[in-house]
Each structure stands twice: as C-alpha cells, then as structure tokens.
Image 1 (cartoon, rainbow, N blue to C red):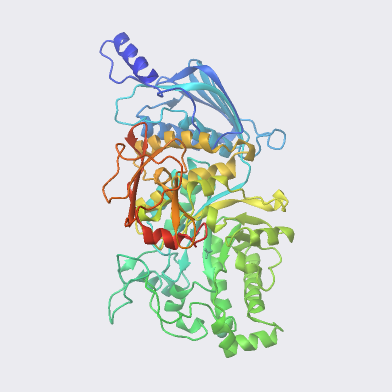
Image 2 (cartoon, rainbow, N blue to C red; image 1 turned 120 degrees about the vertical axis):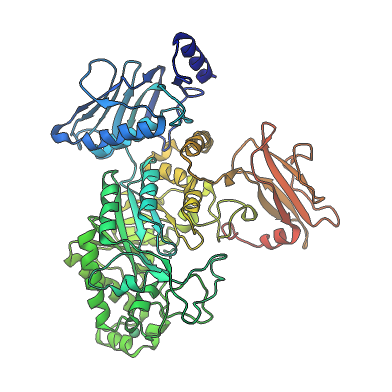
Amino acid sequence: MKRFNLRVCFCFLMIGAYFPALWAADSLHIHLIPQPVNISERPGEFVLDQKVSLMIDAPEEKLNEPAAWFANQLKTISGISIQERRSEKKAIHLKLISAAGKNTIGNEGYKLSVTSSSISLSANTPAGIFYGMQTLLQLLPADTKAGAGIKQLAIPCVEITDYPRFGWRGIMLDVSRHFFTKAEVERYIDEIVRFKYNVLHLHLSDDQGWRIEIKSLPQLTNVGAWRVKRTGNWGDFLPALANEPATDGGFYTQDDMREIIKYAQQRNVTILPEIDVPAHSLALIAAYPNLSCTQSLYSVNAGFRSPVRDDNALCIGNDSVFTMLDKIFTEIAALFPCEYIHIGGDEAYKGFWADCPKCQKRMADEHLKNVDELQSYFVKRVEKILKSKGKKMIGWDEILEGGLAPEATVMSWRGMKGGIEAAKMNHHVVMTPWDYTYLDLYQGEVNAEPPTYGMCRLSDSYNYDPVPDSVDEKYILGGQGNLWTERVPNFRQVEYMTWPRALALSEVYWSPKSARNWDDFIKRMEVQFHRFDAAGIKYARSAYNVIFTPVRNSGRDFSVKLSTEIKGLDIYYTFDNTDPDNFYPKYAGEPLVFPLGATQLNVITYRDGKPIGKQINIKKEELAVRLNARRHEY
Ligand code: ACM
Ligand code: ZN
C-alpha cells in the first residue's frame, strides 16, 4: 500500500518524471535472512537515487573492491547507478575501523545505520563491510527489478549490529555426479553470499567424474572427466555399450579454477577442494586401473547400478597410490589457497582390501589389526602428505574408524555422532548431519517432488543446532548444507534443491540461537521468495504442501493425520478421485478414515481463499507402507 501511495504522490509532483519513480517496500517492515544479532527499526526512510554518493573511509584502497561490487549489484538489481565521490550531501559511508578483537563485531561483523539523511556501514574488515552490504541489499524493496524504470528506492531507517555465530558457513556442491560450468559455479557463489555463506566446498572427484586438471597426470581428465551420456532416472541407466564414446562431462582447467577462486575471494568465499579417496575413486581408477586392488578395467560410471560391487577403492598396499596422491595433492595445494584440503574418506567398502595380498602385506608390515586400521593408516599417511604441503586435512566422519589422524578436522555427516566423538578428542568439527543438512533429499511430500531419496524438510534444517549439548562449542567450526547431485542434472535443479533450505541453514550458522523463530522466519522467507522471483532464481515451495502422517488404529486399520509445516493454511480433500478445491471438505484436525472402498486421498492447501500448495494424490496402500517407516525414510 505504501508503495502505491508513494509512487502516485511522486508522479503527481514530478511533471515528466518516469513511472514508476519511487520504489518502496509494500510495508517498510524489515525482512532479513539470516536474522541479525541486534536490530532496531526506526521511523522514516532513506531515499536512494543516483545522486547518492558512495564515500569510502579506509586505508590502502581496501574497500574499493567491495564498493565497486556494491555499486554494480545495485545497478543490476534496480538499474540505479551510484558513484564514489566526495559529497557532503546524501551518501552511503563505508568505513573500516580495524579494531577486530577490541569490539564485538569481530572479523566478519558490521554495524549499519540507516537514517533519512545517510547510510553508514562500518566494520573491522572488508569481509564485514561485504556482509553489511548484503544486509543493505536486503533492505531494498523485495520486488525491485532492473528495467522497471526505477529512479528512487526507499530504504527503511534502522540500526543493526551483526556478526556470525560460526566462522565456517558452507555449502557443498558435488560437481562430479553432474558437472556444472565455471559460469554456473560463479552464479552459485553469487547466490550463497547473499546469505553470508563463506565456504564453497567442491566435491571434485567421485565414481562419476574427475573434475580438476592435474597437469602431471593428464589421464585423470582425459579419461576420468568423461562418461557416456544418459538421461532419465539416475541409477537405472544402461552401462556403457561396446565402443560407445564418452562425451558427457567436463572439468575445470587450473586456469578456470584460479578464476573461480578469485571470483570467490572477491566475495569472501573460500573454495574448499575435495578429492575423495580411498573409495569413490572409480574415475581415477578408470584412468589408472593399476591402482585398485583387483586392477579391473572400468569406465567412468554414468549413473548405472552395477550388478556386482565395483572395486572403486585405491589399493592401500600399493606404494604407487601414495606417489600418485603426492602428485595430485602437490598441485591441489598449490592451486587452492584454502588452509584445508578435504580428502573424502567416506563409504569405503573394505572387502577388496581384506582379500588383496598387497593390502595384507601392508597390514602385516605396519602391525595393523584389521581393515579399519588399514584405512586409518591410509588417512594418516595422506595427512602427512598434506602437512608437507602446508595444508590441514578434513574428511568425512569415517576417518574416525581405526583411529583418527593427529590433526584431522572431521566433517560429521552420518548424524552428529562422529562430530561429538571428534570434539571430545579435542578435534575440530564441521557439522553436516545428513538428516538436517543434506540438500539432495526430498524437501516435502515425495509425490510432489522430482525423484530422490530420504527426507529433510525445511523445518528439519531450521530447527537443527550444530552444537550438541555434550560438546564444547569451541570445537565446532560451523556447518554446511551439502548438495550431492546424482539426481540434480541441471543448474535450475541446483537452485531448487538449495533454496529455501539454505536460507534456513544460513540462519542456523549465522544468527544467535536465541533469535531462531520459525513463524517469523517463514514471513521473512516469503519476502525472499519475491527477491528470488525478481532475480529468476528457482526455489522450492514444498513447505506449502500437505504432510501425511498415517496413524495406526487397531489391527491393520489406520487413519491419516494431515498437517503443514507452515501455519495458517487450509487443507481441502477428497476420497472420490476428483480434484479438491475450497468448495470441498476442509480438514478439521481429526485424522481421516478412508471410507469403505476408497483407495486414494487427494489434498490441496489454500491460504486466504487461494491455492498455495500443490495438489497431491496418494494411494491408501502407500500410506500403509509408511506406517512402519521412520521419520526421515520417505
Ligand atoms: C557422504 O554423504 N557419503 C559423505
Ligand atoms: Zn590392495
């Protein structure tokens, strides 16, 4: 309403002015994600137009890059150009105070003050200024869109002091199962920094593709980056046919990766490289078959399930494996400035090691009691390689098996257990428990989603906390959302699976725990959906869909409870196979009983008389199967 009034008034005042001239939020209420530590809304607004100056107060041009980034973003989002100039009139002041350690905002925090006459953004570091700019951009009206002829934007007056709870706020993108181009990775970086993420973990190798150029081992990408082209349902694909060319895939040259790293650095994002060993290594083994225990010949897996187990693990008894890993990690260490290298370490099938004479000899020589200790020997030896190159090791929580390497950091994915165990041994931990942070899982009723597995609802992500009660918070560096991409074949689906769960996780990792408020988050998320729409970013609306909970009555009989994650929605339903709308029965809270002979329940959600969720049709027998399932199983 406010927008309309302001816009109309302005048009009356400005003869010959462009329409619409002043773009203000529908309500000047502020909707930020992640929620800042301290926020005080004030009456009034700052009117931003191209006469506004950017004034920088920082030594050694330290803020020139973020200032240019901000001006560019503003132009992209709204069409309004502002410039750096000395002007005592209306200005956005950027100030580096360089007092980290002496004030509460630390290395990534900021203070933002918007009054009707000026905007002042200060921080100890350029990173803090950058995060303050993200907040400032979220103060713009949500439907701001370049090309709409906007001349002025209203920014609500506010005082904000803000800093993160955790220093490690990551997203993992699996670029092995599906390859995403440099431009797509950069676009993803642009999207995640909006919500103050600062780590992009790239899963660069797996059975389905090797994605980074290693100059001393050209076969890794000549062979390992390419597979036969398949589309449809991942897991059901046909294996490579005889002489079928491997044309699908790709890799980043070291020059490409340097550009990605620089792009990320300019946005305060660290690229964490993962080379997944000793298992998940079929792409490497396809290129160098002598490095597995069985030395079987493989092609890169294109998404088919083998009838027999693939030997996708490196032979730990073979010294050539360590020679090769030294070469790989020498180049990885030189290429990536990140202090860590992720070595994977997950899901190794140890049966081939148990049957392999070389592995048996290694176990005898090194006095290793079992294959868990053999895996631990491997991980410790890789840690030494990384250390010799000035890098710290991080790995999935399987690296705990058989004894943790002395200085390893653990990425806890099989729940929080591994993280708790590592923290109790005074090791650092990054929390990524699958059932709360895996972005490849279903995010709502499976009948309304593209096929995947498991379940991680928006509220699961929002309500999780990375610091279990029994653990000292100082060992928890932070956490991530992890996007495995077996069933994510294009970048639009990357976005769909990421948003809005990564909005929820951004709040888990940035905001104080005490600020968590689901209903308020949903309001802020819905405003963010307008920003996604304006920017052409795909996101999931799954949280508007019905959740079915079958409840056992007596014997084999059951009824069905219906609910939604988002409060205040109406649910309409039918048992007669017709499509429900708001003229049909409305769910009143009591579990529904299937009428005699009915085999299907159709439901849809409405809000304020309009459909808001998808219509979902579910068979009675499917609900019967779910009676025995656990929470995250479907
Ligand atoms: C994993 O999900 N295998 C780390
Ligand atoms: Zn072996």
